Image (tube, rainbow, N blue to C red; front, side, top):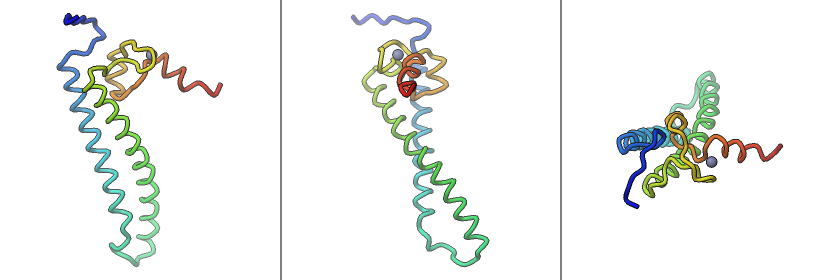
Amino acid sequence: MATKKVTKDTLTAAELKEIKNHLLAMKEEAMARLKDKKNMDMPEAEVGDPIDDASRSLDKEILFELSGNAHNTIEQIEAALRKMDKGIYGTCEYCRQPIPKKRIKALPFARYCVNCQHSTEGRHE
Ligand SMILES: [Zn+2]
C-alpha cells in the first residue's frame, strides 16, 4: 500500500514540483493579462486623436481574444493544481491511466490521455 511503484512514466516529486511552479507562473501570467484587459476597459485615459482611437480598438480586440484564452487557461491550471493536491495529477480523468510524461510536459494541464482526448473531442462525428 505504501509502496511506490515507479515506472518511467511516473512523475517524480521533483518533476511534479517543477510542473507546479510552471503552472503557477502560467497562472500569474494569465491573471496579469486579465487585469490588463480590465485597465483597458476604462476609457478615461487619453481621448482625442482619431488615429490613436483606431489602433486602440484594434488592441482591444486582440486583448479580448487573449483574455478569453486567459480565463480558460486559469480554469484549466486551477483544475490541474487541485489534482496535484489530491495526488491524482498525471492520470487521465477518464480511463485513470497515467498520462505519458511527454504529454504532461507539453501540456501541463492535460486532463486526459491522448486516446481519451480524442474520444471526448470526436463526439460530433
Ligand atoms: Zn484516458
